[in-house]
Amino acid sequence: MIEIRGLKKRFGKLHVLEEVNLTIGKGTLTAIVGPNGSGKTTLIKSLLGLVHIDRGEITIDGRKVNGDCAYRKEIGYMPQIARYPENLKVRELLGMLKDLRGVREGLDEELVEQLEIGREMEKPLRTLSGGTRQKVGAVIAFLFNPKLMILDEPTAALDPVSSSRLKDKIVAENRKGKTVLLTSHNMNEIEELSEQIVFLLEGRIYFQGLIADLKRQSGEQNLERAVAALMRGARP
Amino acid sequence: MRETLKLGRYQLRDLMRSKWLFAYSGFFFLVTFALFRFVGDGSKVAVSLMNLVLFIIPLVSTMLGTTYYYGSREFVELMLAQPIKRGSLFAGLCLGVSIPLVLSFLAGVGGAFLFCGSEVAQDLPAFLTLLVVGAVLTFIFVALAFLVAVTNKDKARGLGISLLFWLVFSVIYDGLVLLAVVCFADYPLEMPLLILSILNPIDLARVLILLKFDVSALMGYTGAVFQQFFGSSWGIAIALTSLVGWSVLTFILGRSCFARKDF
View 1 (cartoon, one colour):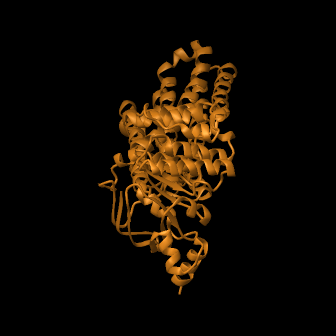
View 2 (cartoon, each protein chain N blue to C red):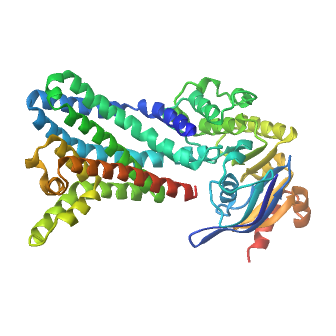
View 3 (cartoon, each protein chain N blue to C red):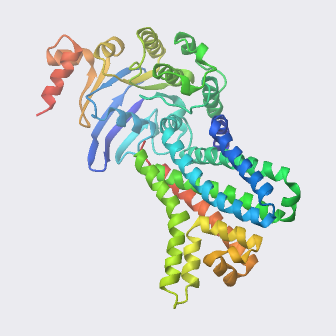
């Protein structure tokens, strides 16, 4: 589904990503982990074309990411911080996206009910709390039945009920054959959701593969400790 | 193009709900109305109104454009994650801010014109020019604000720079012209001043309106140079072309910075 070859990106003097090679198979659920500032969000943003890469090549579903925007039809993205035009109502925002994409049928609005957004529909976005905005972001990411879902810390601001419902939805969509790529700092959550893990540190990939393999390799029983061990090993 | 229009429409709806746009409109209505009632004479009203327009419109457009762009950064990210071209998004943002501003300016001043029809009728072409110039200035300064905001990550810095642009064009520029005239009085200054004037959209707007009103006493140095150099009708054509050039160039420059930007 995703092929990244020799990806390099720097902001000024800061090398954010160095020689990233990554393959993400169709229908997998992969978590990207790494400390703050390790390049997770930049990696995600280069997949979306939000960040222009300096070197290397990204292919998504056979299409090269190089400025053309059509490939994004198949991607649902949930950003870390969700902010929207202040005076628009939730219904209008969703309507606008449907209108812009020109899609009216085959929409997935299950999350509206599951995350209990129905009663927020007529409220202007500026009046919504951070968590509710995050929910709106989740609805948008799933709305168009995308083949690939990119979720940047999806559950960070959610209450336990919404968080578990969103996780159920993520797993359910993955079972239907959709590819999911997410980041999180919550190792329990990652263990619960995904099989594949990518460990990123200072712009390099130090581990990519099954969570079970990572645990075996480090000799730790739990993922948090295994990742911590990996981090200690990677840092000189 | 279709995407741009759709985006612009939603932004229009977003902005049209904010109260201060009505305040902007109401302000222009009240001032215009009061000028007509208390000053009376058509061309005097026009000149006072012109000074106000040349001062307020660039300031409000600059400030609103900059804050709006910084306020919608996350929204821009969301939009860029959709299958939308960056160029269309930029155009949509730009139009989405400038059109509501233009509409409320037109509604305010135009509304007052309707109440004072007889006075306006005497100088109709000139008053219409004033409206057109106000609209063009709005677009130029919104585009300029976007250009500054796109190229500066930090909001305080961006606001400072766009405010500086406004200050240079509307206040410091006049001082510079005066200084140049005093210091280099012995030299032929027409050409340099003409160039200086073309480099300042606010001055171009002033020259354009005054040439239309034909009040040479109020034209100031650059206006006089314009009239002397080109004559009234050519002067108007050149000032108008330069204004349009300003809006197109700032817009295109902003769009290309936006296209190359990392979010």
